[in-house]
Image (cartoon, rainbow, N blue to C red):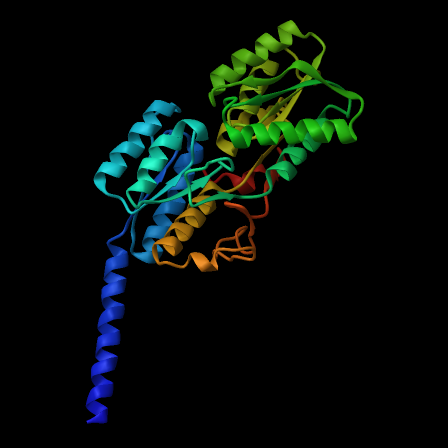
Length: 330
């Protein structure tokens, strides 16, 4: 009799485990990016696909075909209508996405964000590293290229792009702290609209307006390459310098010809994988495990620090002409 009861209990447990696993695989986790055509986010999709393959969960990526807030909102609206279980979002403008992300959460959809430390309507925001340290590191690279002296300016995608602005502000703070012979021009933040041609045009305008401009600090992946293109066209190589976040395919030509000194970045595929792991944990009811020291099982996200709603990882990559071949993932 006891043996029969034990077998029945084990059978029920196994059945429950099977049902839970089957139910989990029915989850739909959508990663929403800024621009589905941008190489950065094409690389990010590789992380989403890897997560889906590893877990069997229906995880996929969507995004507008250009960096446009209204289009990104519409993508999220469509996914809410489709009944996704979780959204992993890289916001173009965190304030602009607050209403639609609140709508998602009100419907019971788990929301995780990336590059949006000021996002209110999210369970957690994941950052690959401390934004202040990263912005200071970009400035260190620019300052070295400028020989630690001269006038400079910063570029951001949009003045509403929280992460880019944090990097720019941290860069400015580092300059004031460590490089007294450098000077920020009055137009301290110039919008590039996360577009290389716009960054190029703005850089040309700046160099014409400020003939003694010596440095341009970029934050979006298109800023420094756009500035480098302007430096090349205006014959300012060796006189004006630029450094910032970007990726090898976008910056390769300019690293090679010396109009761009250093690019910095992190692997967006790993960021996507980490976001999806976190969303899965929340769906599984494991929020009590989300605290400082959290290990998401992804390189750079093994020992995270929790600050409010923001989970901070560690690590970034600095790429120059000499080592760029190692990081041509895209």
